[in-house]
Length: 87
Image 1 (tube, one colour):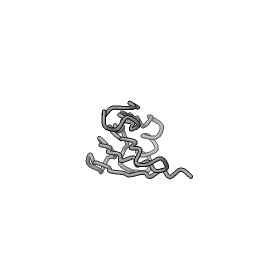
Image 2 (cartoon, rainbow, N blue to C red; image 1 turned 60 degrees about the vertical axis):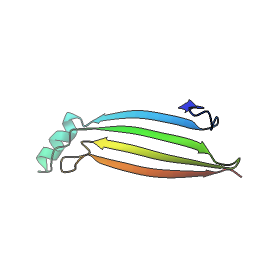
Image 3 (cartoon, helix red, strand yellow; image 1 turned 90 degrees about the vertical axis):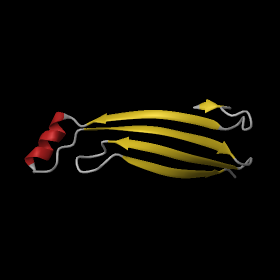
Image 4 (cartoon, rainbow, N blue to C red; image 1 turned 30 degrees about the vertical axis):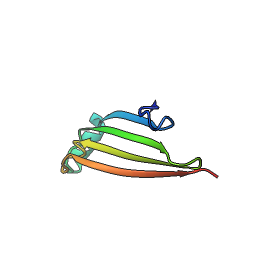
């Protein structure tokens, strides 16, 4: 996380992430034995910002791009929004 990425919002935090997952040979053999499409690997690229809206409210929009999510699926984009309320 990078705090103060924008001068106008010194309490905001900007985050970047990369995740890689590989399906092991035993799971691939299980897929093959049951006649299912064989899983391989997937990569996720993510960027998000934690925005301090008020003293008690934070919003965190998130964008993820998933590469090779499954044998029958195309690359896809995922948008999310998380709200944090502090009492």
